[in-house]
Length: 123
Length: 363
Image (cartoon, rainbow over all chains, first blue to last red):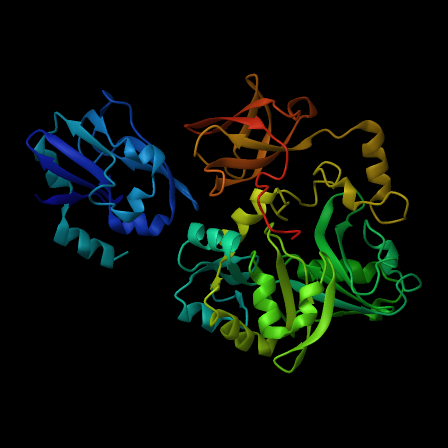
């Protein structure tokens, strides 16, 4: 499945109407040691690019924005005890939450893998 | 970053791919492998820190007659040769111009070690207070300093630099030769672990750095780890927990102030002792892994009572920890506090210091 990325370094992977959300490997690396993830509440509805969750590293606290509109269907509870999973596997086991009711038309506002790679080069 | 000063170890840090950032006017390594890994290495083995940015002044003269005795909050003429003492340089209002350590090198000689960002101002202030200003020289540029901290540091130092190091007690130092140069090895540090501060000529520091890093028990640690280590001990950081608007009494550091001697700022402290401090240092633990950070607000029973001066996630306690200044009514042990910043809110409780008690500091 293809991943799409936001300019704020979230990734999303869509399967039907459900989407898995996380932060990119680049973002996890830049943040350094991640010490806390504020997971969103299940059932919370968000619009694309609205604040969805928060993440803290030793260095800083940052918001995580929703790459797509939808409703929070599931959160990665493993991050409560082991937020460092985001450092180790940002784009797989370190996922943050799953959204449902997503509209894949919104993907057009995101970058695909190649576009994101290019975007990172320009930073 | 062009106007930043660099230590003699800049090329070493770049070779080690350290993340570099400005700190107190210097370009300094924040981290190498990662802040938490470096922090744990220091708690378990031996961590090596570049501290060349800190300032050193040499005083040569009569400590009393030339006026050094009246400059700091602690007595200097009674420091035995071979010992060091921590305390403050204050302004007239009792605010902290800097926190520093004085090393008694000889009967008529003392070295004053100060924070990097304040070095220039400290030198001017101290000099202006001396009866014989010529007694003070700024030796910062030619003096290098690295710290080796951690439970294995004694074994490492003894193996590399000789048996004399084995018996240095806490807050004492020896003069010795390292790599053929005059050096001072001091049993001090700011991490809560057994450790040494090594002063030697700046041009010898890269060689010492490389030599120590060849030892598999030694790993470099940056300012990120250093900040977490000192905070776990509850030690004050100049610029956060201390500044010219905060007195040592407010900061909970009265044990480094001797009210039986004369020093600039004493009258203000006497007034504070009579009137009481409007705010007090507080140490608190957060109920979650969330980190309180500098300038977050502190609330008690819904009322804003103060501000966080230092805060972080503690790798050893696996929770947020912080220091702050609050109204006296909110400082008692066990008091429940709320820490707030924008959308972030966390619950906390006032605790005793140090946060981390497992250190090898006095072993």
